[in-house]
Length: 397
Image (cartoon, rainbow, N blue to C red; front, side, top):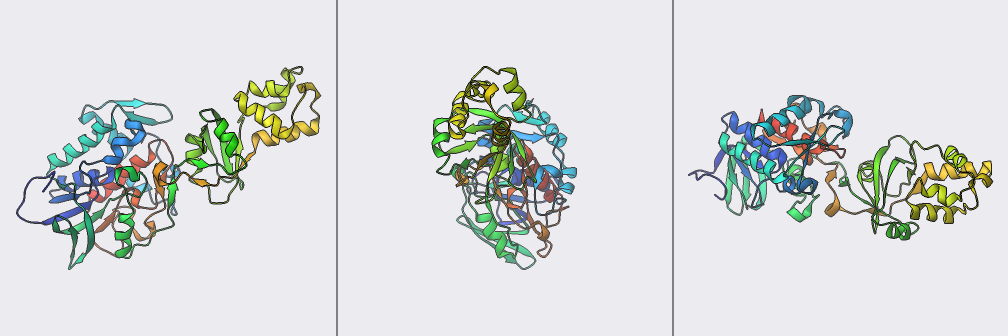
């Protein structure tokens, strides 16, 4: 059995499908309880998404993680798991393995090398007695009496408990697929609508030329849907196809097809005061001190803002403030799963225990991590959910 110790039987206490962040954490906890545990994954190495996250320096947790940082149909669902395994528990794990944790502000903690985190999780699970069948194609999973059976290209495995930890289709470049959802649905666990999350947004034909011209430029913004009920803030980066950056990735969590976003290009800036401070300067030059110069020039051309600042009428000032603090951007779509950090939506949390991650109507079946309809903001929240949900399931599977 590749990547595991040899054994004469294919019968286990726990079968875990998926060797990602949640699956590895769950495997460690199950094995620590004395449960004979097997992790099955198609990848040749465990933790492939961990290894490439954050450009190789994964944002492994956020010390401020709370229920308000997650999108879920049930806003209370994440509370129990987050309380069972906190960011400080993960910090303890890093310290046990002498792995440095870098504080990047706003509660965001990064590792020096994401690869080291994945390998430490793997080592710890192995040390507890967990076994691994890597490079193994999962073909089917089904109930088998009081337990479960999993059919693979390396044979059939049986287990008293089955944990679905296969994640979503984001990061297809490392082999991510929607298999976990298909398996969950065969067990009667419906999924909410799924789409790419924490993903760049593409510009429509009206703004595509601007984005292409501005490629590489960034500025601090605040973004809200036209309803104004939620906003994200931070840096926005222009790309050759649209916009990206932390503010945009978080905005993708609430954006819906056809919706117009309102972008505050100058959050916290009093435009009238800035103009009054430089009455003789041309408008585009004043704005060029507040915004990237190319963007300032484009805005002035679009809205016909010209002449010295002192000559701007009160009516036109009101229009300028409205445009700068509520610039309308209607995305044509997202950059898709290949560029998405996560998958929005997933297994309906109404069908799963928030304490144990066990399916309410399928005893012995557990769902963890990205597979569930739980999506965190950018900043370490999604990996923390993986650790926490995997830990919770590991106490019961």
